[in-house]
Amino acid sequence: MRLKELRKAKGVSQLKLAMDLNMNQNAISRYENGVRQADYETLIKFADYFKVSIDYLLERTDNPEMR
Image (spheres, rainbow, N blue to C red):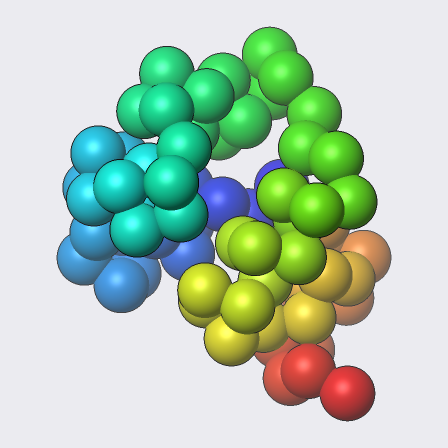
């Protein structure tokens, strides 16, 4: 998942992202490190937050545009 890449490109800390999405910072870390997989609702939150498609977030495409 491109979560860490997107977060760093936007200049957002794990804590800020967690606060913005009403999540726990430890959960963000686990998603970024592949220890935990995001459910559908969480994937949608991440995609909406970074304004990218879920396919881009999951590295299924190199096109970040939402359809």
